[in-house]
Length: 180
Image 1 (cartoon, rainbow, N blue to C red):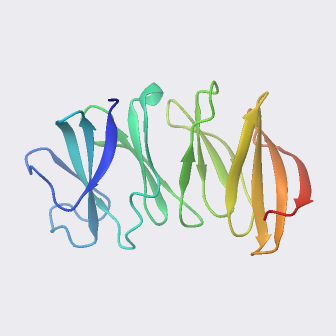
Image 2 (image 1 turned 90 degrees about the vertical axis):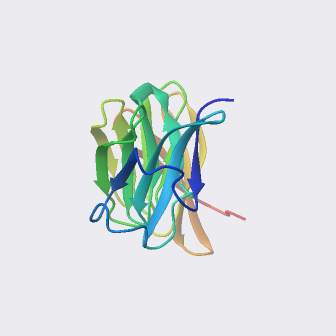
Image 3 (image 1 turned 180 degrees about the vertical axis):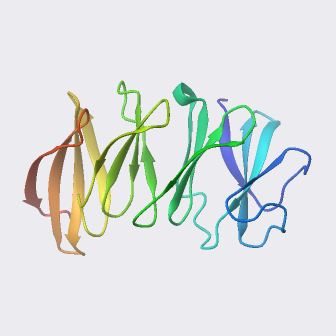
C-alpha cells in the first residue's frame, strides 16, 4: 500500500507533531490533525489550522516534489514528505482548494472556485490563470499539454468548457455547455 494521508481526531504522539498555521502549541481547537502513513507506520503528524473544518477535501501526496499537499478553507500547504514541516504556503484569493496532478507534466494545479495556479516541483508558481470561473471548476481531461475544465459562471445553469494551455496558463477557448 502506498503512503497516504489520513485525518485523525487526535494526535497519536506529540513528540513529532508539527504545528501549521496560527499560533503553535495553543491546543487543538480550530485545528485538524493530519498524518502521513506508510502501511501501519505513522511517519509524521501535523496539527493544521482549520477553522472551517475543510481538511480532508483536498489532500494528496506529491512524491516528485517530496511533499504532502493539504488544503484548508483558503490556504494550501506543502508539507515536507519526511518530517511534515512546512515547506511552502499559498494563501488563496477564493476558498475551497482542490489539487490536480496532470500526468506527465511535473506540475501541480491548485483549483479554487475561480482560479487555477500551476506549481512546479520546486514549489514555485509557474503561472496563475485568474477568473477561469465564478463559482466552481471541474477537471474534464488533460491531453496534449492542454487541460479542459468545466467552469461555472451562473450556478446552476451557465457553464463553459474552458481549454487552458498547461505550459503558460493561457485560456485557449471558452464554449458554453449544458453541464447537466
